[in-house]
Length: 238
Image (cartoon, rainbow, N blue to C red):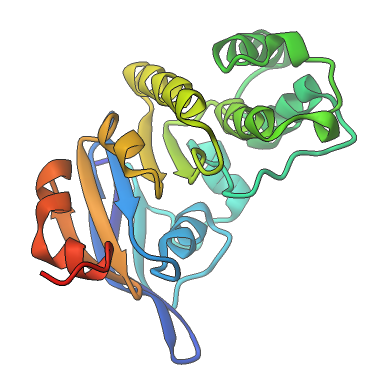
């Protein structure tokens, strides 16, 4: 397993955002995560990436305990993430945004970084915008840049946080194809998304969270058909 969570817990006062979560993600797989707003999805990513410290439990990467490792140490170990609201360095060019991410992870030499960043821009449809200032990009272009920056760190585990939000149906289809290519290249993906049909087109398994608790995990279409999901996530009385 590339990622293992064991009884992972985090609370802010009386509000539990992670309630003794157990999870195992095989290398090369894709896991989708859904749940209502406030379910603890982004908090889970913050715990895995190191932005939050857990109150209890263990996080392992390739069997190694990284629970107390820094954000940069986790990036160097191969964990990358995108953010629901794109956060580019607006005064830098698109290409420079990728360079900053790649240098932060610090896993390759300069020549490799320049070559790989060019390849990533091509694969995410941003090559023609390489010299454009990031602050001038459209929403779709910013979403693509958010994904490209994460890929620039050469991740083995990629955490995607609602990268389809706000996109048109055609744009979502293009995004799904890009994520499929990333998975086919051997990158393990954990994807939070409200656009469920996009998730189901890519992921092998689906996990549902509610109030920081793991409700159900399994084959995507079976999970979506379950009574618990219809009641908790979709708000439909079973």
